[in-house]
Image (cartoon, rainbow, N blue to C red; front, top):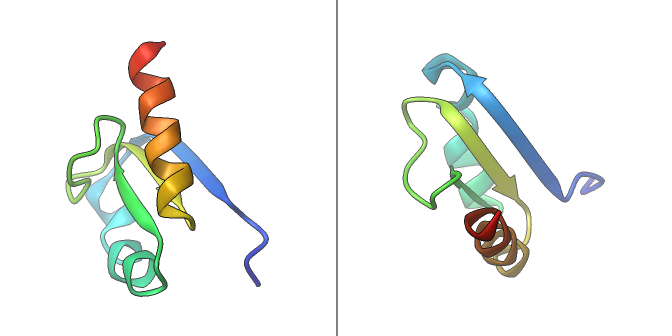
Length: 64
């Protein structure tokens, strides 16, 4: 339904996120770790439906 714009999680296991990566990306969203890298191994994850919002959040998180 598009009601969630941002998901920020920490401490995820690979099985928590691996199935979601292709779904989010094929829908036009972005899902990465908190540094903008791949999150296939879980850990700290940032997911956004809007790539521009994702980039803005990564910049803000880097400055924190």
